[in-house]
Image (tube, rainbow, N blue to C red):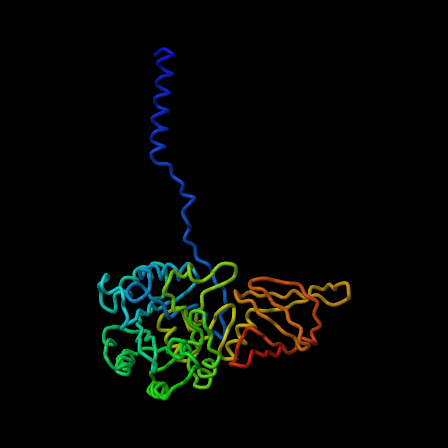
Length: 363
């Protein structure tokens, strides 16, 4: 082959390769990697700390996403367990999407198993106030709850061993001027048809509800009630998170979650705040925050300590002199400390009641 022919052959082959590349040029780096954001909160009192959201909606009621999307969001945002609680009585998508009240669970369960998310079978009884909206968790079949009487619906849930949550009791659309525990709610409570109440819903905190839960010894709950894409609604970057319920379970299983909730081993976690029983709050704080001397002093001859927080929750700590410091999440800071001023601590972002916060005695 002469040089001219060889040059033409090489040029032709190169142009063919270029043409093929121009028809399909790959940019795989543009695709977002699906990665899980770990939310590290220590285990306490011999229990596992599980991050849960028991209130969310899909296109099978008035949400905007397919059920499997709720699973992917939960996995990426560091949750352990979720409940898809589509409205039984309110489904504006029914004209376009067919399926009974179990459809969202049936569609999502395979994705949940694949991602190791505990998916709890659930539904929402959606009525005027009273009684308002209530989620029934740990169901076998949502369809029997589709009945005219709200009490009959909740009794059908109880027959299945359900844990029943009163949702957003202070929602202004149903209680515009106040947040009341009404006679009907007392009736439901006495019949075992209210087992927990949302202290926090979506972006609303109801301080009086925390008192209701603590006084009646029922579970405090914090849920997203998400209808939109979570990343569209919540700013989950920069140390922020969706609201969730911390459940202290014997193991990472649905049965243990259910047992823990009926035993009132929960905390509400929202906006880097915790709310609930004092003993649980204190255990979380003490398992998270520690201080150790560095053996050094500062320019004023004050002893320096490394103060560490292994938790994803920052803690706002006030000493006996009223001095406040924020111990950042998953961080260590160096502070000059006079231990005599820190024998009793006030943790400003841990709520033990509508008008009280956590007080801790340090050893």
